Image (tube, rainbow, N blue to C red; front, side, top):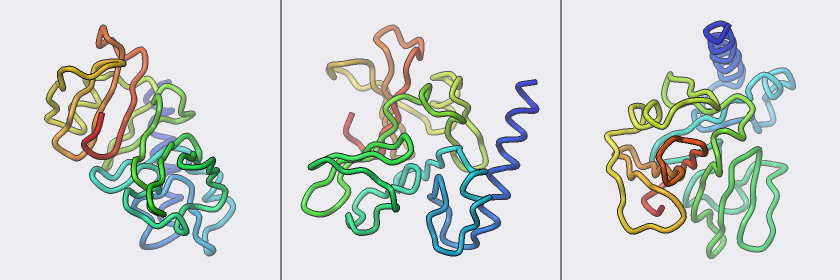
Length: 168
């Protein structure tokens, strides 16, 4: 059953990406004007482009380029499970607070990482990853592909935070 669900998620993702053409390599829900409603509904997996974006929110992007429907409250905001901060009119930080809270998980390259993916699965997909010492609030791993993973103190993956950039 799990294999069928993962395959179905991957097929929906591929169909949604194919329907909107080029420039969609960092989208969660296609937001371009030419995207079809079915493509928007079909793609629920958050796409992570290491070192660049999470779910279509790119670090360094102008606030004006945020997807329609992105909610902002002062210097912070969120869109479809992806959180971000704003500094001087640009997106500063981008992260998923907890992979477990996403309906269909995330995808990196051609690999779907379901909401139940293990910390080790994520480290393999984004690594190699090195543990960062001296950070409060959990355990953090700085990964070679421009992502920081955060988890519970026991490293069991009861929650897994995924951050773009170098700051845990």
